[in-house]
Length: 283
Image (cartoon, rainbow, N blue to C red; front, side, top):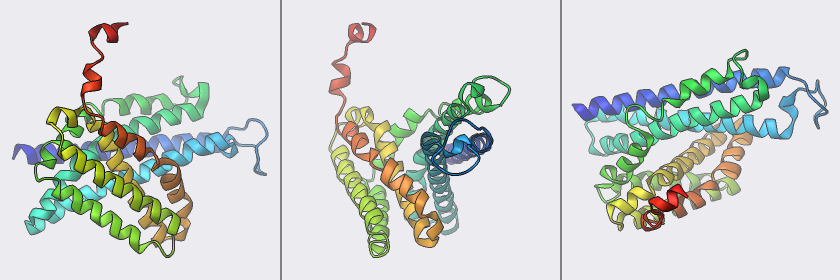
């Protein structure tokens, strides 16, 4: 009963994160469409929305919010299916996705709110625009209902107690989906499939590690898992609606490549962290 309550609360906090991120993004987008500054490469009214770096920030934010929402909805579906069917596979899927949904959704709330302040420039730092309020509201989310570090340790610890079976089943689904998309979207599908394979290989490495070595790389591992699931969600969206393909390309071509560096951290173990002693930390 306790874990049921905690898991439901963690999904609720993930949904809070998605909501704050969506609000911060909409606020920043409205400002960027209205604020005029300098010459832009797109014929129009000179809104900062048309500067490449501002467009990058807003496109990144939209891609992240879509991915976080998709992961939270997948988790909610798994919980409902586990309740409705009693299936151990659905129960395992719900348990696996809960820490990912909570940690990624709330980290993204902070990151998108941060981007929102940046889009506003100096106006984002003062109270007049309200942009900073979203960042303050978001900052508690990675802390309560289990810090995101605890979520990541749960993912590589208790949620891998099945020998990684639930994780491997999910990775298999991502790769099957990518295989089905190769004809229409060969480059995007190939990138998602390869990222999922790298996630599989690192999961196998983690399972062979002592628990504290897993814990040392748990946070980057969780983010890499979320990157793969986000790429999968965007690829499915592009298949269903061609209008979604440009946003899918932002996620898969610009954000998904981070998985390689994240998984390298996850494989590194704990020894290098403890080699930095207290004197080194204080230097």
